[in-house]
Length: 347
Ligand SMILES: Cc1cc2nc3c(=O)[nH]c(=O)nc-3n(C[C@H](O)[C@H](O)[C@H](O)COP(=O)(O)OP(=O)(O)OC[C@H]3O[C@@H](n4cnc5c(N)ncnc54)[C@H](O)[C@@H]3O)c2cc1C
Image 1 (cartoon, rainbow, N blue to C red):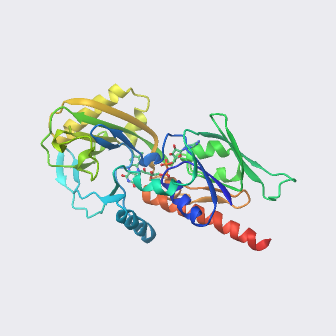
Image 2 (cartoon, rainbow, N blue to C red; image 1 turned 120 degrees about the vertical axis):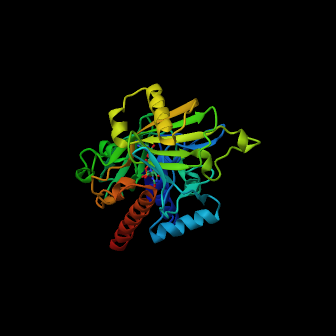
Image 3 (cartoon, rainbow, N blue to C red; image 1 turned 135 degrees about the horizontal axis):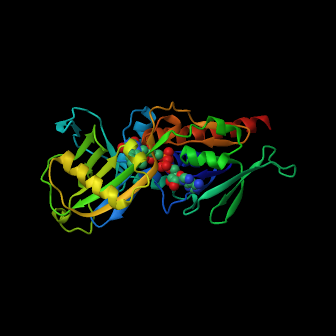
């Protein structure tokens, strides 16, 4: 089976892992320069920076087994920090017992082996999908053709798996019956800001869930395992770097704000939450239009159209988060394979 996958995030990596085991021919199309999607990290002088997913958790038995395998390969480590909670101007230690994992040395490190040996096209934004049914085709069910914004077209696919956010999947599939099942506002935005400080804060906290105000999360980047750059001879040379996420409501209200304004507001939030004055030496802002799951919307489940050999996966199909993204990719791959198995039996 010749399968095209759109996107190279965690859900795509999970699907590729399953499909590779079954000898499928896979082509991946990713609009960015590398894999990872919302799990990707940026390289910087002081080490790697996680602007998207901060960590992930594992509850499903299959995913726990996968995480253990990644840990044994040195691709994932436990982030052993005890978070704090900031509420009504009071900081208190959280008593949660959650185990939190991070990829090392970048958040998406463990996805890289899945994509190795696969025909992968980076900087290839797919903007047209066609399902071609033809009498001359030996495939009675038709075949898929994909065209990119860059003007390249790729054809001859028996099946397509979309792993883009729902809004983007909808746009690609307008007119297809499955569109009616795509919950379009299931991912909400997030402004992420990295603040590098001129002087140490001397606070003991490494990560804080913020329950009021504009910020929702504040974390010290260097507290994560494997984040320090090998280029720094002495870890104490590294400036303190704090990553701040704004709430979905704030991010939606300030969607078009300038990076300068967002940086200023982030610095003010950091001062408020840490109860310290800070001097920002450098900043990096990233606006995620589709960041995390909107809990007001019920998950639709992995979507699948057997007639068109079309599946839609992604965190949003199962309720958000890295773990669900992974599970959605596995489920979608299994659905595509079971259809192949059934059609093989009918021939
Ligand atoms: C700020 C932020 C904080 C988060 N914090 C956490 C956390 O702490 N814990 C947790 O578990 N989860 C967290 N998440 C969510 C987590 O990152 C996601 O659940 C997960 O990474 C989603 O993976 P995915 O494969 O479903 O989608 P994505 O990672 O979004 O992958 C989809 C890919 O498709 C590509 N794409 C889209 N359209 C096209 C196109 N037309 N052509 C080609 N390629 C295309 C995109 O570039 C992207 O690489 C966070 C996310 C964000 C943004």
